[in-house]
Length: 127
Image 1 (cartoon, rainbow, N blue to C red):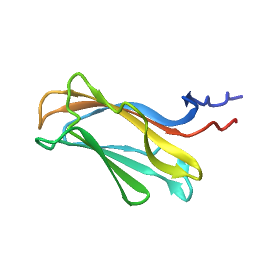
Image 2: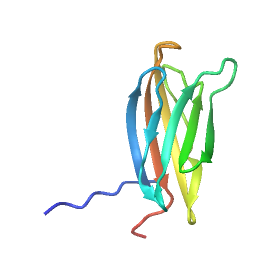
Image 3: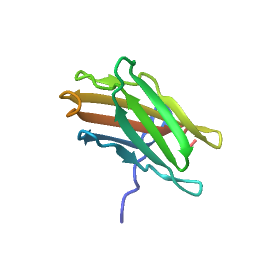
Image 4: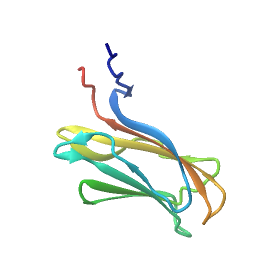
């Protein structure tokens, strides 16, 4: 007899996917959390350095079901993170949210990143 898979909640939101990945220079991270609707959503996280620009996050959802998320100038060795969950989509009336943190080691173009992410879906499934 197998035990049920535990559900994790963060601030009343269901955690769909969460993890930490060590990212070599020039690589991106692809996360396929759960199937939704007609198939799984693909999230591709890329890291870009743009001289003279502030740290920011850009979203490109024009190639559904793939969402490209660019983390621009996340290159601090002490770490950088989003301070609040970012709404990146909706499923019905429930918001899909994302938080990220990045610690960088080395300097461009040989920078390695320790990338952590948490994706949540608004609300509880047992409510």
